[in-house]
Length: 439
Image 1: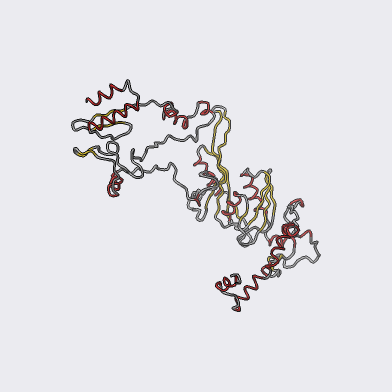
Image 2: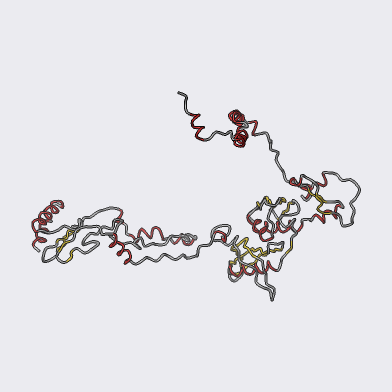
């Protein structure tokens, strides 16, 4: 212990650097080994003496503790809690979880820190273990179990309109009624919200309101709104109520509506257009969901006004489908034959329906009164279609410059095709040879 006493006696008079130099000299004289830079560990033949020097650093890291840092991230003030803040506050994490202190990527072994300092009487030096030893150490280390998800991950095809929220998700077919089972039916949530009303003894009372539509994808569908104290009860109640309010809608060739129409509910207006097969449904996401459950595959719908009130959008679309007129009903009302013109059939008139009386009226009709595209718009109001000049792009200066640059390449695609057909197109090697400069 003479070494330690001599060092500590000099600590009061010498500066820190002088003390370190003195320790190194004493280490050489007494044949000690210096292992750690922050804590000087000496291993004589009889005993182990550890001498450490403490330095005082004044910085942000020393002033603030880890608990104070975490509280600044995870805590919310009392006033904030009253205002509803803190719902998405992050949780405290263990940053050292799954880590071995003192072990890096190279897995160097430092005697006295990450491994034994001596083996018998032999003092070990810093070394890098072989791959076999590091693999054994890794296997010996316990695997950190992965943190379980609080909510299981939902597949992309089963998600709703946004995130983990109910609107747009499927809740299955309605519950059976006695012996009748709703085979082939599916129900989807269109709206899910919290509503409040004031009571005399309980004050403000909150409930869950759910709007659910159900259908079999073959023209049969219905919707209902239900309220309950819990969300699960509200969804089940709305689903079963919708199953008791089913309506059947006629579809043209089982893929689209019979004609264009416009319908208004409160301050929400929907313009629906008939589309050919393969067009798809281009509409409000709520209308898309209803079309999927009804069985409409091709449609275009433009929603105007208050598009965010889901109940008005649902009521308006169901109202428009109920009020549409089939081709047979149109032929009986007008006492005229109904024919269809298709471009793929060279616009040859194809009979669709004829009057049930067996004859049509002989008096002529005006062309304007029987414009089928605008026949079902009420009060003579039709959608405004702004005129777009088809030659507008050809009148721009940039377009003229483009055509002048491309003028030299005209007909070259067809000419190259003919050269390939007749075997006159040169090979790539010949093309490279032709591109070489003449000597």
